Length: 137
Image (cartoon, rainbow, N blue to C red; front, side, top):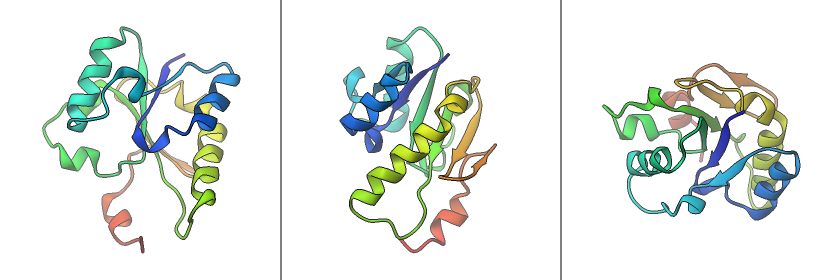
């Protein structure tokens, strides 16, 4: 089972504790001491500090496009995508619902896998940047 490394958007203590209470190995990028720097720097640091298999769980849908040329396929990545129109506490509830619903699948991702998770569906690809740009945010 892989270590889940939660990106900065997913560091609510209740979320982390809830996943851990289910027996999952969960850490945040803060736990690795890398909250600043570019995404590739953060990912490299986590990779250097954790010898085993791990999955980056993020909401940053532009991470791959923002850093073209970085070998993202060396890592498993899971994107959490919320439905439009959520605000306030509903945002945090949706994050938790998605992660708790799909956690068993996310921890099983193999190196190079890139998946997108919504509240009721999932895709075997990373999020479409075009579809995200068309959303009313």
